[in-house]
Image 1: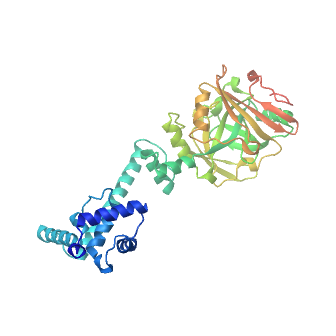
Image 2: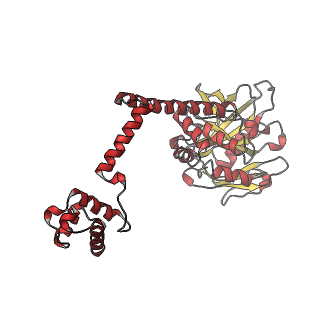
Image 3: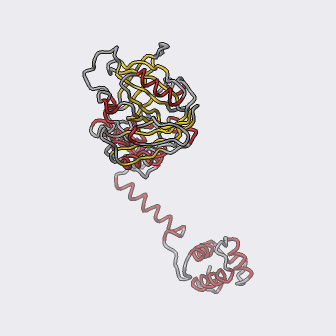
Length: 400
């Protein structure tokens, strides 16, 4: 072909590359190259044979006009490579049947799938039985396993978005339940309603709603129950803790995909083991049986909450006397700022309900340990409920 045009292959490459540079268009097609060859280089229409088109194509891709064709860039070269590959397969003992290759591909895929599934099950067993981390049932637990291995993976980011919790309820302790309810009524103008007893724990309570998803629990020793074998929760047997908010609980935000298992595992990873998740129940005065799951109460005090999940039961905030709302909360106790960083950071603690109030954490408690101070909007104005030693005063109300 070159002889018929009286031009060498090098000259053809150089000429076409020069024209491409002049045109300054890296997107030239084979049709454009033919037009350039006919109009600007004076080649006859039938002179640009396939071999020359191949050269044009390579020159267009080349960074330099002296780049040459590799054997695989030509039809003959590709055919030779195919023959060599076929010969290697034929004489190496590898299968030559299309079905055989399809079978090998299927076995490879299934083998990798089985290996991945086996590793996933094995690692899940390790997480649950050796590391003792709770996992959310179902596919969410699979994501949590992968997130432990690869925090920056898609599953890790998905699990991070699911970590979210809100203040569930505050615990106000007293020596006598009726006296405690009277004190809250005098302060807020709303009387907490009887909640029920906790069989085997030795306590009973009264409840006051603080919004759509938070409430105040007034709790005291239940004289109708025998003295329990274990100490009553919230240091109720210590008179110094009476008349104050001693602890609080947070619940997972199920609407955002959070679960009590995910929150508990996150706390455990951060060195704040919340204890095992157990099931509790009590019967309301109306006869309704409430069931919920929660972590150990013995681990909760002051700025360190316990976790609670009401599941399918009605949240007590929706069935307790209304009229008050929680607009501020300050948690006092040893290393409270560290607990606050964990709650607001990895656990995704939300602001307080509709008010959007903040939850603050202040290092240092008093002689009886950690405590909380809550600011409430009530029919009697804004009031503060908490330890007398906190000296917290509301803007328009009294302090309890």
